[in-house]
Length: 445
Image 1: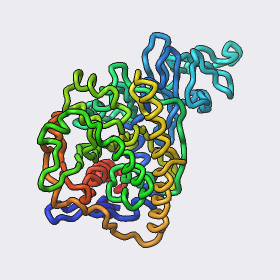
Image 2: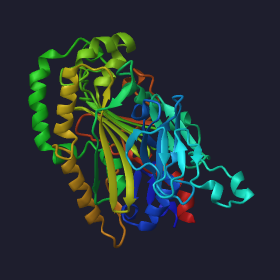
Image 3: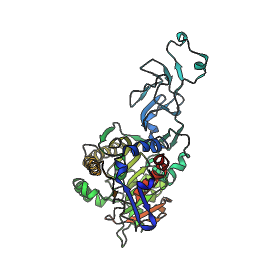
Image 4: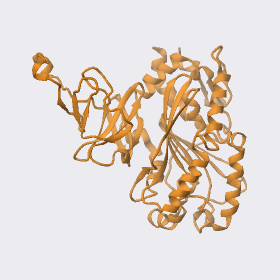
C-alpha cells in the first residue's frame, strides 16, 4: 500500500483528504504501533510523578510496559518494566516508592537504578560463564529526556534530540510550566477509561472547535452564566489595553498554530478573569513573565504534542495520554494538571471546574466519546472512502505566524486567525503529514 492511498495531500490544488480506512484497518493500526508509538518519541509523564528518591510510576510505549523511577541519588531513569529472566512484568502498581523491586515470578531483584541485585539461588544454578558475562539489569529505554518536567521516551535510539522533536511547540509547554516557580503537579487521583473507536479520533477532537456548539450545548450555557458573573472583573492587561487582543473588523476570537513533527494548538482569546484558577496570581505572573505571556496563560488553549500527549486549558487544566489498544479501542489516562503552590481557593476552583467539564461524569467527556464511537460505527469496515472533514480554513491558513504568536516569539509552520465560526480544520494536516512521514515505509513493507 502507498501512503497516497490513505492521505490525499495536494496543497497547490486546495485538497486535503483522509481515507476512512486509517481508522478501521487493522494492518494500518499495527503499522502505527511500530512506526509511530514504538519508533519515535512519546510522552511518558511528569517528573513530579516520581519526585522523591526511589519513587516510580508505570506507563506504556506501544506494546511495551515501561517504568520511570528515581534512584537513591535523585536521578531519573526509564526502563522496560519486565524482568530479563522470563519477561514478567516487574512493577505491578501505577506508582509507588521502592528501593528494591522483586520479580513476583522467580524473585530476581533490582534496585531503583535498574541494576540487578540478586538472582535467587544463583550459587546452585549451574550457570555457564557466558551467562555470568551478561548484564542482568533492567533494559533502559534507548531514548529518555526531560523537558521542564515533561518526560519523553523512545524505544528507538534513532530519533532526533527531544528539543528538535518539540521544536517551537516547546514554547507552549513553557506557558504551562511557567505558571509556578515551583513547577507542575498532578492533582491526586487519575481517571482511566476506554472508548470503542480509533485513537486518532481523540487526537483530532482536542483540536476540533467545530464540534463544540453542537456537542456541548449544556456546558456552553454554564459558561455563559459564569462569564456574566465575572465580566466586571477583567484586570488591566495587554488583553484590555493593546490592539493585539481587541477584536478587529474581522471579529478575530482565536485561531490555530501548526508545527513541524505533528504538533498543533488551537486557541481562543479568553481574558484575565476570575473564571480562571490562575486569577489570584495574575499580578505576579505578569511581573515574572510580562503581561503578554501572562495573558497567553489565560487564553483557552488545546495543545497536542504528537502522537500521544494533550494539554487542554480552558475551564481547568487537563493532561491526557492517548494509548491505542486496537484499531477500534483506545485507552485514555487523564489528570487534573496544576501549578504547585496555588492557593487553597484556586485549587478548589480548579478541581470543581475540572469535574464540571473533563471528568467522565462531567458535561464534555461523555459527549465526546459517544461521538467518537458514532464515527467509528459510521466508518464501518467495508469499502473505504475519502472523508471531507479537513477543509475548513484552507483559504485562511498562511505560512508562518501572526501578531498574536509574536507576543511569545512563536514561529509555527502555519497559522490561522479566525472568528469563532471558522473552526479551523487545517491544523489536522500537521498530524497527518507527520503520520504519513512515519508510516510511508511501514505501509510499503
